Image (spheres, rainbow, N blue to C red):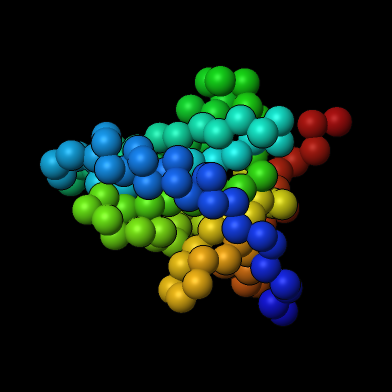
Length: 136
């Protein structure tokens, strides 16, 4: 089921693009991400590429946001270095983003930019919370 896309947060896209342009140099940092917290703050981060598989920029931004006290993210976007533009999250990131923030909107490209619910990027997904035991 496809819902109507939400308006694209162009300020968020530009924040990620700026970080990609100014902070992503060489092979270690090739992607930047920006997320908007519920309180309006924008948190940015870069990936930490390593041949053993480092964390993607989307995952680093989750940790950076938590470190800054921004625990409720509303929208996220990733932008590649070398002017590659908006890049959709990988499968692992899609699952983590859904598990942490089920109402999150993700800005994707593949044509005109659009903001879609993360659940649409992972239809019929495994829901991590379903296997958690009640703490009661």
